[in-house]
Length: 244
Length: 244
DNA sequence: CCGGATCCGTAACGATACTG
DNA sequence: CAGTATCGTTACGGATCCGG
Image 1 (cartoon, rainbow over the protein chains, first blue to last red):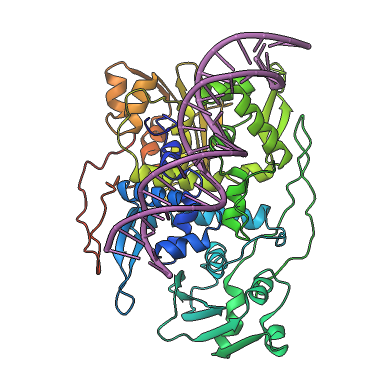
Image 2: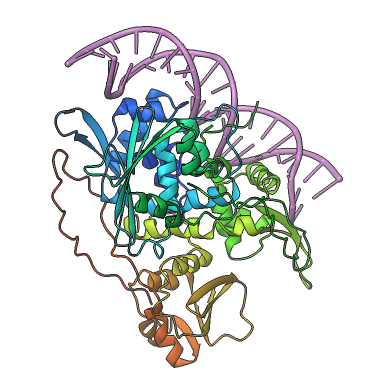
């Protein structure tokens, strides 16, 4: 009858009691880039039933991580947004993303869904605050019908759904080309030359873009030797895989 | 038949495909402080069935996050340990703990289990690298039959299950008193005076202990106002709740 | 059409009993 | 001690239906 809980006096377990169920952290991920409507959430969470999404949103509201809002005019539609408590899960979600980029970043698998917003969050995960100390720029990305923008300022980064007010750089392309760009299979210059991407704006800031991120060396997760002090596994030495 | 997956080309979702199922991150949490035997894991994960734990460990081995090891003499018993990939989930688990300390840190609930190791990890989560820049010390905690030690050096912290080689400070007490210490309901000095804790070792380093951690202000997760720009909620102003 | 609520088959989990 | 086998219960996934 009552809710399933780990029943542990432990901060990690308490957190997982609230956000550890299936889909929950992905709902948070979606809302981290801005408010979303029920239908948009559903569209980005293929496989999740409407009933389950409604139940999750209701529970997250009860727990004070999510709130219902009304989108500003002209939209004026009902939507869901994170509260301060919910938004504070950002570092946790980014930590998950960082691990995935390092240890589970094989290429796109057959049938896997791809959304622009996820990659934008990935950029946040590998953002290099040091390298961005003196950069102040707004990048806008347009893929298919989706638009996100990334604001870099004071060594911080922010990723938001929707167009920017005054972007310094605009990159417009297809989902597949954008995916290839971020996977390091293609450079922006190449994409632009081949006509598969439209790029406009400040050339200086465009060139700076790739320096703002420190992609972790993707590693293979091979089981190590058992027994004593397991010897260091040599670096995999695969392609460094640069984004942008 | 096949494994349940989110099927998203997204680093966060990929990570959750591997460690997002029930209990999995708590198994990782247990192993973050050192190798553990099957029975010890089970004892610290009350409510988890033997079959499920076995299945999780088998899967995590297949995925290269966990490996079977043989404990060094005199134990010489089989145990489970993290691989490099598994250990790299440390930052993620600590991020979860940090959120819990801030937003879900109500007092101990009726029936909740408490283990020394979880609190030791909590200390890691709120460790203040700046404040510890010039501290070099090993603290040992003994609670009931459990022993952990915390090594602080070069602005880094490490929490390990078992006794230290040469601890600078040793604190021995009961689970309930230790819990109260970390919850800020009691100071080490008070506990020592009342005879509910044995403390020995370097007094200087003992006094430094509490300065090494920056406990987040615990916040209530109240749902914020909907509509326009939600007004700032006033600080809860509860007791600052200092550990140690 | 959007935002759900309801229903039902399947997969995951929890507790206990049993075995090398 | 370290698991495997079994079985009742809960959670999830997909489809259908309903109100504004």
